[in-house]
Length: 124
Image (cartoon, one colour):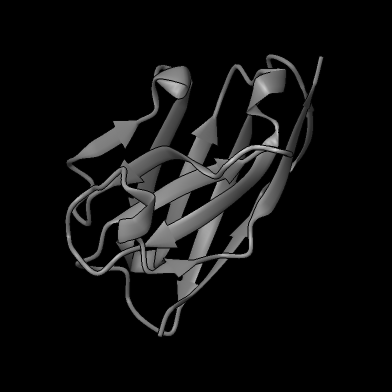
C-alpha cells in the first residue's frame, strides 16, 4: 500500500506560480506512473498531468499546456507539479495519484492510490 501526501498549495494572485509536491511512502514510485488531478467546487475531478516512471513520457490537459510542468525525483519518491501563469480558473483541490503500471495515463479510473489533496486558490 502506498500513501501519497500533497503539499505546496495556497493562495496566489493571477499570473503567479506555485510548485506542488507529492511525497510517497510505503512503496517506491520507481516503476509506476504518476498523475495530478484537480477538482473545482461543483465540478467533477479532471485530469491535469501525467508522467511515466522514467519521466520520458508526459501528458497534459490542453488548458495547462505551456504553463504547468510535471516532473519526478524517484530517488526522493516525490512527484512535482510546477504551475506558472496561474489563472483564476485553475482554482481547485489538486490531487496526486499513482497506478500499477509504468506508463503515463490520462484515465482517472486507472489510478489506484490517491492523496488527500491540496487547495490551490488563484485570485484575480
